[in-house]
Length: 299
Image (spheres, rainbow, N blue to C red):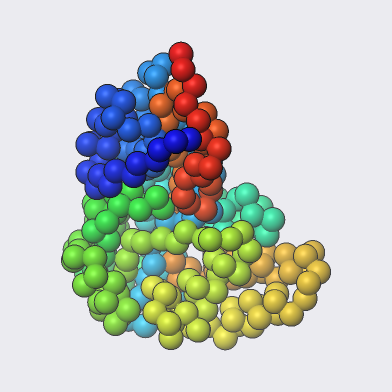
């Protein structure tokens, strides 16, 4: 390679246009809605990899009625996860059963598949004393991320689902820095956001998202601090026996599915599109584009 030029193009459509007109050779994060069209072109290669991320819907468990487990369970039952995967991820994601991706060595295969059951959701709300429903906010992040490429669209789908069980949801969004600050201050009822890990250790998913320490640092969007859950995580770090560690993480996932401080929605695919004349470019499930072996092959 004799020359490498980085062209910063924030606009999705312009990035794709530059690839298709051969003004650039590699783009990250092509729009999922355009993948089918791009994949049919002989001059473009599409690379995919299972990414270590999770998109989720977190409840502010320090605010009523989200401090009630039955309410959180009801909201989880009320949403159509399959419709979200189709409309937001264009089926370029795996339905989540845990914050851990299914490729993780600690993933709990025994977890129940997420159920869409509005009637059961209504029954749980009635048991929680909310048979008439309630009002709430869904905060949708204003930026596009791999784990959630369109939070506003997702919020609209969830809003419609919640209306079917008598819950009136208002969608809220702010400029990104303001959004993050207000989240840290706990002003939200619920939020659509996610997490991208920089290593595959299960602790890198559980601790930053749901531990009591993460509540102090500001990354615990569920505002959830549970001593039982923290104890499980700490026990998992006290041994280097992977089988024993796995048993603790299996228990942690089962506990989360019962307590439901958040609803794990999807693990998105990492995708990049490349000019077919470029070889040696690999895709990294943790992010970035490896270019050290890149070369152009003349047709």
